[in-house]
Length: 381
Image (cartoon, rainbow, N blue to C red):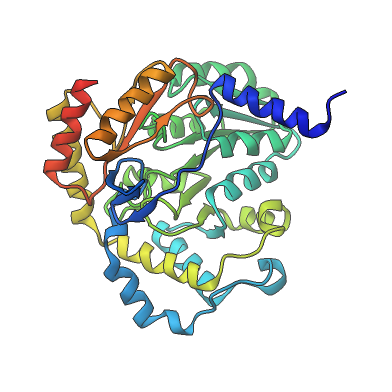
């Protein structure tokens, strides 16, 4: 009879055999670069879409003007020790920026999605989610225990078919999507999805804007804001750890939902609050990013340049280069590495077998020369 540790070894061997074995790379970040094995490479994996990691002066200004008065750590959950002043101020800034009833900070996007969806799922609730929503959303749906269905990625006709067949059997229906999808780099048809509320008064919209916040909209508030849909999205998630260069997340919702989340969301109740200095840093960056229109415009220029030079019709700063096969995608990543670029192959279970890819992230810190060279390499694959 095998011991438990032997069974764990067998499970690890299964990961290796199935191609799902993962390691954490050892590297040293340096702005838009990373140093790996003594080699300095331009990082194509980063979600630092506005290039804030290169802007060391932002941190220095924050330290000089605010940091000394802030607590560097947090000792308990917010329900025990309360919101810091920084959290109060930041939630107010978010509420006012989006013109919504309330905002709520979370320790991460994973905490938000996995904690919110179970709270929304009262008896008589159906969840209908895009096939490619993030793992944190899937985990939140599973934890909710609610019945759920998934519509084909960005397929409005399939979504309408599901709703026409099942929506009237439930008291509440939540349609869940991302605005910009993290692995395919494409956009949800938000306007059309929101319009479905006219046919189903008990339909509510949940949108994760993790990869859109900071990059889209006049003030970087995301796709829903850019399209004037914020007041028709019932729950919106924004992430602070990508374009905004910090850590954590926020949700926007009605005041009623905020009160219910504070009362029932396990990932908020049973976790230590973010340190005040971290929240203040996030608030500082959020307000700085709202003014970074030129940086957003430049990123758009880089995207158009990449499309022109590569012949790939990229639609966002996230550019998937699909290279089926583990060996093939690994070889392509090595080609980029030899040319001075750091990129990790994306494999199952992150994406389905047969759709392995390189996921190139353009950032505002890149030069036109670098983007032209990246496009040249893509043509060689």
